[in-house]
Image (cartoon, rainbow, N blue to C red; front, side, top):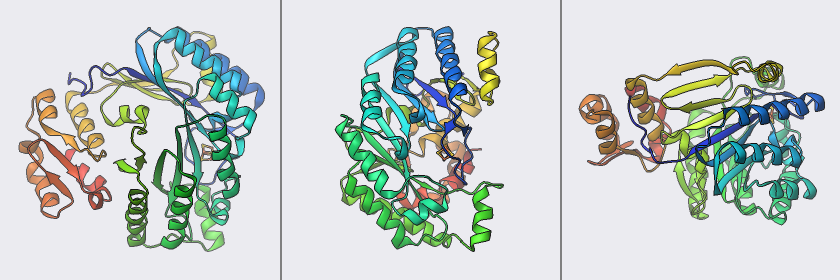
Length: 381
Ligand code: SF4
Protein backbone atom coordinates (compact mmCIF):
# COMPACT_ATOMS: atom_id res chain seq x y z
CA UNK A 1 0.00 0.00 0.00
CA UNK A 2 1.40 3.45 -0.91
CA UNK A 3 2.28 5.58 2.06
CA UNK A 4 0.77 8.92 2.90
CA UNK A 5 2.80 11.94 1.87
CA UNK A 6 2.19 13.37 5.34
CA UNK A 7 2.44 10.28 7.45
CA UNK A 8 2.94 12.20 10.65
CA UNK A 9 0.02 14.53 10.22
CA UNK A 10 -2.85 14.35 12.60
CA UNK A 11 -6.25 13.37 11.20
CA UNK A 12 -9.08 15.78 10.43
CA UNK A 13 -12.72 15.38 11.44
CA UNK A 14 -15.50 16.32 9.01
CA UNK A 15 -19.07 16.71 10.33
CA UNK A 16 -21.90 17.12 7.83
CA UNK A 17 -24.96 19.23 8.67
CA UNK A 18 -27.61 18.69 5.98
CA UNK A 19 -30.06 21.53 6.76
CA UNK A 20 -30.71 24.80 4.90
CA UNK A 21 -33.21 27.66 5.32
CA UNK A 22 -33.92 27.66 1.57
CA UNK A 23 -32.68 25.55 -1.30
CA UNK A 24 -30.53 27.36 -3.86
CA UNK A 25 -31.30 26.60 -7.48
CA UNK A 26 -27.75 25.51 -8.42
CA UNK A 27 -27.04 23.32 -5.41
CA UNK A 28 -26.12 19.68 -5.76
CA UNK A 29 -25.05 19.03 -2.14
CA UNK A 30 -26.60 16.61 0.32
CA UNK A 31 -29.10 18.93 2.08
CA UNK A 32 -32.77 19.52 2.84
CA UNK A 33 -35.00 22.17 4.40
CA UNK A 34 -34.54 22.80 8.10
CA UNK A 35 -36.84 20.82 10.39
CA UNK A 36 -36.28 21.60 14.09
CA UNK A 37 -37.25 18.17 15.41
CA UNK A 38 -35.14 16.34 12.83
CA UNK A 39 -32.19 18.64 13.56
CA UNK A 40 -32.30 17.88 17.31
CA UNK A 41 -32.43 14.12 16.69
CA UNK A 42 -29.66 14.39 14.09
CA UNK A 43 -27.30 16.21 16.46
CA UNK A 44 -27.91 13.52 19.11
CA UNK A 45 -27.12 10.83 16.53
CA UNK A 46 -23.89 12.48 15.35
CA UNK A 47 -22.72 12.98 18.95
CA UNK A 48 -23.34 9.28 19.63
CA UNK A 49 -21.62 8.22 16.39
CA UNK A 50 -18.51 10.30 17.21
CA UNK A 51 -18.32 8.85 20.71
CA UNK A 52 -18.72 5.29 19.41
CA UNK A 53 -16.22 5.51 16.58
CA UNK A 54 -13.61 7.67 18.27
CA UNK A 55 -10.31 5.87 18.74
CA UNK A 56 -8.40 8.58 20.56
CA UNK A 57 -5.95 9.37 17.75
CA UNK A 58 -4.56 12.91 17.49
CA UNK A 59 -6.70 15.27 15.39
CA UNK A 60 -5.94 18.89 14.59
CA UNK A 61 -8.92 20.03 12.52
CA UNK A 62 -12.70 19.81 12.80
CA UNK A 63 -14.80 21.03 9.89
CA UNK A 64 -18.58 21.58 10.02
CA UNK A 65 -19.76 21.49 6.40
CA UNK A 66 -23.18 21.44 4.83
CA UNK A 67 -25.86 22.33 4.14
CA UNK A 68 -25.80 25.26 6.52
CA UNK A 69 -24.08 24.26 9.77
CA UNK A 70 -24.63 27.75 11.21
CA UNK A 71 -28.32 26.80 11.55
CA UNK A 72 -27.27 24.67 14.53
CA UNK A 73 -27.51 26.38 17.91
CA UNK A 74 -24.22 27.23 19.65
CA UNK A 75 -24.96 24.67 22.38
CA UNK A 76 -25.43 21.98 19.69
CA UNK A 77 -22.05 22.90 18.16
CA UNK A 78 -20.52 22.83 21.65
CA UNK A 79 -21.85 19.29 22.26
CA UNK A 80 -20.44 18.09 18.93
CA UNK A 81 -17.02 19.62 19.65
CA UNK A 82 -17.04 18.14 23.14
CA UNK A 83 -17.82 14.70 21.69
CA UNK A 84 -14.77 15.11 19.40
CA UNK A 85 -12.62 16.15 22.38
CA UNK A 86 -13.78 13.11 24.35
CA UNK A 87 -13.27 10.67 21.46
CA UNK A 88 -10.07 12.05 19.85
CA UNK A 89 -6.93 13.78 21.07
CA UNK A 90 -7.84 17.22 19.74
CA UNK A 91 -4.82 19.52 19.47
CA UNK A 92 -4.97 22.62 21.72
CA UNK A 93 -4.50 24.83 18.64
CA UNK A 94 -6.93 22.86 16.43
CA UNK A 95 -8.55 24.67 13.50
CA UNK A 96 -12.32 24.31 14.02
CA UNK A 97 -14.25 25.64 11.02
CA UNK A 98 -17.96 26.38 10.73
CA UNK A 99 -19.48 26.97 7.31
CA UNK A 100 -22.06 29.69 7.67
CA UNK A 101 -24.51 31.60 5.57
CA UNK A 102 -24.70 35.36 6.10
CA UNK A 103 -28.42 35.34 6.94
CA UNK A 104 -27.76 33.29 10.08
CA UNK A 105 -25.32 35.83 11.58
CA UNK A 106 -26.44 37.56 14.76
CA UNK A 107 -24.10 38.91 17.47
CA UNK A 108 -25.49 36.45 19.99
CA UNK A 109 -25.11 33.39 17.75
CA UNK A 110 -21.61 34.31 16.66
CA UNK A 111 -20.46 34.96 20.22
CA UNK A 112 -22.01 31.59 21.04
CA UNK A 113 -20.13 29.81 18.24
CA UNK A 114 -16.86 31.44 19.33
CA UNK A 115 -17.52 30.39 22.92
CA UNK A 116 -18.31 26.86 21.74
CA UNK A 117 -14.81 26.60 20.29
CA UNK A 118 -15.19 27.55 16.62
CA UNK A 119 -11.95 29.23 15.46
CA UNK A 120 -12.66 29.78 11.77
CA UNK A 121 -15.72 30.80 9.75
CA UNK A 122 -16.24 29.97 6.09
CA UNK A 123 -19.00 32.19 4.78
CA UNK A 124 -20.98 31.45 1.64
CA UNK A 125 -21.26 34.97 0.20
CA UNK A 126 -21.12 33.95 -3.52
CA UNK A 127 -21.61 37.50 -4.87
CA UNK A 128 -21.66 41.11 -3.68
CA UNK A 129 -24.27 42.01 -6.29
CA UNK A 130 -27.90 41.55 -5.20
CA UNK A 131 -29.29 40.74 -8.64
CA UNK A 132 -26.82 37.88 -8.96
CA UNK A 133 -27.71 36.57 -5.50
CA UNK A 134 -31.38 36.63 -6.45
CA UNK A 135 -30.74 34.72 -9.64
CA UNK A 136 -29.05 32.01 -7.57
CA UNK A 137 -31.97 31.79 -5.15
CA UNK A 138 -29.80 33.01 -2.26
CA UNK A 139 -31.72 34.63 0.57
CA UNK A 140 -29.09 37.11 1.79
CA UNK A 141 -28.11 40.47 0.27
CA UNK A 142 -24.65 41.96 -0.26
CA UNK A 143 -25.29 44.36 2.64
CA UNK A 144 -26.18 41.43 4.91
CA UNK A 145 -22.95 39.68 3.94
CA UNK A 146 -20.90 42.77 4.85
CA UNK A 147 -22.76 43.05 8.14
CA UNK A 148 -22.15 39.34 8.87
CA UNK A 149 -18.38 39.83 8.51
CA UNK A 150 -18.50 42.80 10.90
CA UNK A 151 -20.54 40.85 13.43
CA UNK A 152 -18.08 37.96 13.19
CA UNK A 153 -15.09 40.28 13.75
CA UNK A 154 -16.84 41.84 16.77
CA UNK A 155 -17.48 38.34 18.14
CA UNK A 156 -13.71 37.73 18.08
CA UNK A 157 -13.19 35.76 14.86
CA UNK A 158 -9.75 36.44 13.40
CA UNK A 159 -9.92 33.73 10.73
CA UNK A 160 -12.74 34.34 8.27
CA UNK A 161 -13.02 32.94 4.76
CA UNK A 162 -15.47 34.13 2.13
CA UNK A 163 -16.65 32.13 -0.90
CA UNK A 164 -17.39 33.82 -4.21
CA UNK A 165 -18.73 32.26 -7.40
CA UNK A 166 -17.84 33.42 -10.89
CA UNK A 167 -19.33 32.84 -14.34
CA UNK A 168 -22.83 33.41 -12.99
CA UNK A 169 -25.76 33.83 -15.38
CA UNK A 170 -25.59 37.25 -17.10
CA UNK A 171 -22.39 38.13 -15.21
CA UNK A 172 -19.80 40.17 -17.12
CA UNK A 173 -16.09 40.24 -16.32
CA UNK A 174 -16.48 43.79 -14.95
CA UNK A 175 -19.37 42.76 -12.72
CA UNK A 176 -17.40 39.82 -11.37
CA UNK A 177 -14.52 42.15 -10.54
CA UNK A 178 -16.84 44.43 -8.55
CA UNK A 179 -17.55 41.42 -6.30
CA UNK A 180 -13.83 40.70 -5.97
CA UNK A 181 -13.18 44.34 -5.05
CA UNK A 182 -16.04 44.24 -2.53
CA UNK A 183 -14.56 41.12 -0.99
CA UNK A 184 -11.15 42.77 -0.70
CA UNK A 185 -12.81 45.79 0.94
CA UNK A 186 -14.23 43.64 3.77
CA UNK A 187 -10.73 42.12 4.25
CA UNK A 188 -11.31 38.42 4.96
CA UNK A 189 -8.34 36.26 5.95
CA UNK A 190 -9.00 33.70 3.23
CA UNK A 191 -11.12 33.48 0.08
CA UNK A 192 -12.33 30.70 -2.19
CA UNK A 193 -13.26 31.47 -5.80
CA UNK A 194 -15.37 28.89 -7.56
CA UNK A 195 -16.56 28.69 -11.13
CA UNK A 196 -20.31 27.95 -11.25
CA UNK A 197 -20.91 24.43 -12.46
CA UNK A 198 -24.36 23.67 -13.81
CA UNK A 199 -25.23 20.07 -13.03
CA UNK A 200 -27.61 18.38 -15.50
CA UNK A 201 -30.98 18.84 -13.72
CA UNK A 202 -30.22 22.04 -11.81
CA UNK A 203 -33.37 24.18 -11.42
CA UNK A 204 -31.12 27.12 -12.28
CA UNK A 205 -30.99 25.78 -15.84
CA UNK A 206 -34.76 26.18 -16.10
CA UNK A 207 -34.60 29.62 -14.51
CA UNK A 208 -31.97 30.58 -17.08
CA UNK A 209 -34.13 29.36 -19.95
CA UNK A 210 -37.18 31.20 -18.60
CA UNK A 211 -35.26 34.41 -17.89
CA UNK A 212 -33.27 34.30 -21.13
CA UNK A 213 -30.06 34.39 -19.03
CA UNK A 214 -26.81 32.97 -20.31
CA UNK A 215 -23.23 32.54 -19.14
CA UNK A 216 -20.49 34.63 -20.70
CA UNK A 217 -18.20 32.93 -23.28
CA UNK A 218 -15.49 30.55 -22.01
CA UNK A 219 -12.78 33.12 -22.67
CA UNK A 220 -14.53 35.49 -20.28
CA UNK A 221 -14.61 32.78 -17.60
CA UNK A 222 -10.83 32.49 -17.95
CA UNK A 223 -10.49 36.27 -17.69
CA UNK A 224 -12.66 36.27 -14.56
CA UNK A 225 -10.35 33.74 -12.95
CA UNK A 226 -7.09 35.41 -13.95
CA UNK A 227 -8.14 39.01 -13.29
CA UNK A 228 -9.83 38.09 -10.01
CA UNK A 229 -6.67 36.40 -8.76
CA UNK A 230 -4.52 39.29 -9.96
CA UNK A 231 -6.57 41.69 -7.81
CA UNK A 232 -6.24 39.39 -4.82
CA UNK A 233 -2.45 39.18 -5.39
CA UNK A 234 -2.28 42.96 -5.40
CA UNK A 235 -4.28 43.07 -2.17
CA UNK A 236 -1.74 40.86 -0.37
CA UNK A 237 -3.35 37.42 -0.67
CA UNK A 238 -1.35 34.39 -1.77
CA UNK A 239 -2.88 31.73 -3.94
CA UNK A 240 -2.12 28.26 -2.55
CA UNK A 241 -4.61 26.12 -4.46
CA UNK A 242 -6.53 26.38 -7.71
CA UNK A 243 -9.53 28.01 -6.00
CA UNK A 244 -8.07 29.30 -2.74
CA UNK A 245 -6.09 32.30 -1.55
CA UNK A 246 -5.07 33.30 1.97
CA UNK A 247 -3.26 35.84 4.09
CA UNK A 248 -0.02 34.47 5.60
CA UNK A 249 -0.73 31.59 7.98
CA UNK A 250 -4.40 31.42 7.06
CA UNK A 251 -4.52 28.58 4.53
CA UNK A 252 -7.21 26.05 5.45
CA UNK A 253 -5.44 23.33 7.41
CA UNK A 254 -8.43 21.02 7.06
CA UNK A 255 -8.77 21.39 3.29
CA UNK A 256 -5.04 20.91 2.83
CA UNK A 257 -5.53 17.35 4.12
CA UNK A 258 -7.68 16.68 1.03
CA UNK A 259 -4.92 17.86 -1.30
CA UNK A 260 -1.91 16.44 0.53
CA UNK A 261 -2.93 12.83 0.87
CA UNK A 262 -4.07 13.35 4.47
CA UNK A 263 -6.60 11.36 6.46
CA UNK A 264 -9.94 12.41 7.90
CA UNK A 265 -12.89 10.95 9.72
CA UNK A 266 -16.41 11.64 8.46
CA UNK A 267 -19.55 11.94 10.57
CA UNK A 268 -23.10 12.65 9.48
CA UNK A 269 -25.14 11.68 6.45
CA UNK A 270 -23.39 11.63 3.08
CA UNK A 271 -20.00 12.49 4.60
CA UNK A 272 -16.86 10.99 3.00
CA UNK A 273 -13.81 9.94 4.97
CA UNK A 274 -10.45 8.34 4.30
CA UNK A 275 -8.09 6.47 6.62
CA UNK A 276 -5.60 3.63 6.37
CA UNK A 277 -5.93 3.50 2.57
CA UNK A 278 -9.72 3.13 2.74
CA UNK A 279 -12.25 5.60 1.37
CA UNK A 280 -15.84 5.50 2.60
CA UNK A 281 -19.11 7.35 2.32
CA UNK A 282 -21.91 7.40 4.88
CA UNK A 283 -25.54 6.81 3.95
CA UNK A 284 -27.01 9.97 2.42
CA UNK A 285 -30.47 10.01 4.05
CA UNK A 286 -30.74 12.04 7.26
CA UNK A 287 -33.40 9.78 8.79
CA UNK A 288 -31.55 6.67 7.59
CA UNK A 289 -28.38 7.85 9.32
CA UNK A 290 -30.25 8.57 12.59
CA UNK A 291 -31.93 5.16 12.53
CA UNK A 292 -28.66 3.34 11.86
CA UNK A 293 -26.90 5.09 14.73
CA UNK A 294 -29.86 4.35 17.04
CA UNK A 295 -29.88 0.66 16.13
CA UNK A 296 -26.08 0.40 16.23
CA UNK A 297 -25.87 -0.49 12.52
CA UNK A 298 -22.99 0.60 10.33
CA UNK A 299 -23.57 4.11 8.93
CA UNK A 300 -21.28 3.47 5.95
CA UNK A 301 -22.93 2.88 2.58
CA UNK A 302 -19.80 2.40 0.44
CA UNK A 303 -16.25 1.52 1.30
CA UNK A 304 -13.27 0.94 -0.96
CA UNK A 305 -9.68 -0.03 -0.39
CA UNK A 306 -7.66 2.13 -2.78
CA UNK A 307 -5.17 0.26 -4.94
CA UNK A 308 -1.56 1.41 -5.11
CA UNK A 309 -2.25 2.83 -8.58
CA UNK A 310 -5.37 4.71 -7.38
CA UNK A 311 -3.43 6.20 -4.48
CA UNK A 312 -0.70 7.33 -6.84
CA UNK A 313 -3.23 8.89 -9.25
CA UNK A 314 -4.90 10.68 -6.41
CA UNK A 315 -1.61 11.98 -5.01
CA UNK A 316 -0.79 13.29 -8.50
CA UNK A 317 -4.01 15.07 -9.31
CA UNK A 318 -4.72 16.47 -5.87
CA UNK A 319 -1.09 17.60 -5.50
CA UNK A 320 -1.18 19.43 -8.82
CA UNK A 321 -4.02 21.57 -7.49
CA UNK A 322 -1.56 23.23 -5.10
CA UNK A 323 0.56 26.16 -6.24
CA UNK A 324 3.51 24.51 -4.45
CA UNK A 325 3.17 21.75 -7.05
CA UNK A 326 3.92 18.06 -6.89
CA UNK A 327 6.97 17.01 -4.87
CA UNK A 328 8.08 14.59 -7.57
CA UNK A 329 11.04 13.01 -5.79
CA UNK A 330 8.97 12.31 -2.69
CA UNK A 331 6.22 10.73 -4.76
CA UNK A 332 8.75 8.68 -6.73
CA UNK A 333 10.20 7.35 -3.49
CA UNK A 334 6.86 6.73 -1.81
CA UNK A 335 5.27 4.85 -4.69
CA UNK A 336 8.47 3.32 -6.09
CA UNK A 337 7.83 4.86 -9.52
CA UNK A 338 9.51 7.39 -11.74
CA UNK A 339 6.65 9.82 -12.38
CA UNK A 340 8.38 11.52 -15.31
CA UNK A 341 9.34 8.24 -16.94
CA UNK A 342 5.77 7.00 -16.67
CA UNK A 343 3.89 10.18 -17.65
CA UNK A 344 6.55 12.49 -19.14
CA UNK A 345 5.80 11.73 -22.78
CA UNK A 346 2.17 12.78 -22.28
CA UNK A 347 3.04 15.75 -20.05
CA UNK A 348 5.76 17.20 -22.28
CA UNK A 349 3.30 19.05 -24.52
CA UNK A 350 1.98 20.94 -21.45
CA UNK A 351 5.54 21.84 -20.45
CA UNK A 352 6.25 23.02 -24.01
CA UNK A 353 3.05 25.08 -23.99
CA UNK A 354 4.17 26.81 -20.79
CA UNK A 355 1.29 25.66 -18.63
CA UNK A 356 3.26 23.10 -16.64
CA UNK A 357 6.64 23.88 -15.08
CA UNK A 358 9.14 21.14 -14.46
CA UNK A 359 12.22 21.01 -12.25
CA UNK A 360 13.90 17.88 -10.88
CA UNK A 361 12.00 18.33 -7.59
CA UNK A 362 8.66 19.80 -8.60
CA UNK A 363 5.99 19.70 -11.27
CA UNK A 364 3.61 22.63 -11.02
CA UNK A 365 0.86 24.23 -13.01
CA UNK A 366 1.24 27.87 -13.92
CA UNK A 367 -1.78 30.02 -13.14
CA UNK A 368 -2.94 29.79 -16.77
CA UNK A 369 -2.32 26.06 -16.51
CA UNK A 370 -4.70 25.83 -13.57
CA UNK A 371 -7.52 26.63 -15.99
CA UNK A 372 -6.58 23.43 -17.82
CA UNK A 373 -5.96 21.31 -14.72
CA UNK A 374 -8.54 18.68 -15.72
CA UNK A 375 -6.91 18.22 -19.10
CA UNK A 376 -3.43 17.90 -17.61
CA UNK A 377 -4.64 15.48 -14.90
CA UNK A 378 -6.37 13.28 -17.46
CA UNK A 379 -2.84 12.11 -18.32
CA UNK A 380 -2.68 10.34 -14.95
CA UNK A 381 -5.84 8.24 -15.23
S1 SF4 B 1 -27.16 27.19 1.28
FE1 SF4 B 1 -25.49 25.95 0.36
S2 SF4 B 1 -26.00 23.82 0.82
FE2 SF4 B 1 -27.86 25.03 1.19
S3 SF4 B 1 -29.00 24.90 -0.72
FE3 SF4 B 1 -27.77 26.77 -0.84
S4 SF4 B 1 -25.84 26.15 -1.85
FE4 SF4 B 1 -26.89 24.28 -1.17
